[in-house]
Structure formats: C-alpha cells, structure tokens
Length: 129
Figure 1 (spheres, helix red, strand yellow):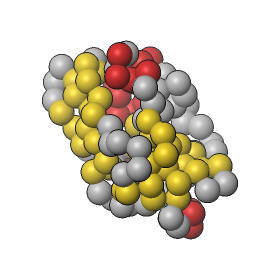
Figure 2 (cartoon, one colour):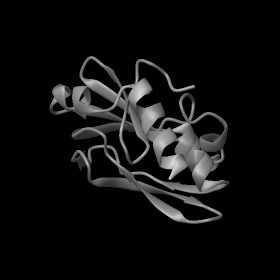
Figure 3 (tube, rainbow, N blue to C red):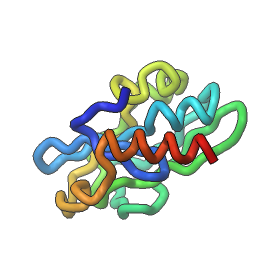
Figure 4 (tube, rainbow, N blue to C red):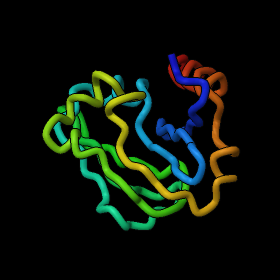
C-alpha cells in the first residue's frame, strides 16, 4: 500500500528522494483521515523549508491540517494541479497528487525517516489506540 522507495514521517508525509531532489506528499492514511480535501496551500518556489516545520496546509471539509517538511531545502516546484483539483489528494496521494519538490540541503535527513514497513506498523499502532 505504501511505496517501498518512499520515506515517511509520523506526521503522515512522505518523501521520495532522487539525487538532490525530494518529492513530498501526504500519505494515503492522512488523506483518509482528513476526508474530502477542498483546498491546498503550498509555499512559493524558492521558499526555504526546514525539516519538521510547516510548509503549507491542507483543508478538508473536516479540518485544516499543517503539512510538515520531511526534509530541509529549497522548494523548486509545486504541483499546480492541486490549485484547481485539490481532490486529487484523495484519489492519488502517492502519485499524481505530490505537493512540492525540494532541492535537499542535507540528503542524509531522509535516511532517518520511517521505511514503508515501519510507517505501516506505526499507523497500525496509532489506529489501535
């Protein structure tokens, strides 16, 4: 269910690292918990983000939730699709509905995040509490 080549945070974001670029999104678990997503607020290209700090937010019919940067660096691209079709996050959170691309300032940060198996175990524990 969760792509093996991604790394995950306990705040339910993912990052896929390719060279010096990290593509960031929210997990299927996050979109499911949020419900119908109606708006996505993303940073501008060129914004510097810091691991663990808010980089934007997702608004659903239930609530507004911060999106936390899983890695540090500079935003090089945002997913323009989400400006007109935020519901794509509900349909394809691990694919077409990525949020931002970040030029990594420290590629080693991603190695400290959860693997797919660790994230699935974490979500399972969280759900059973």
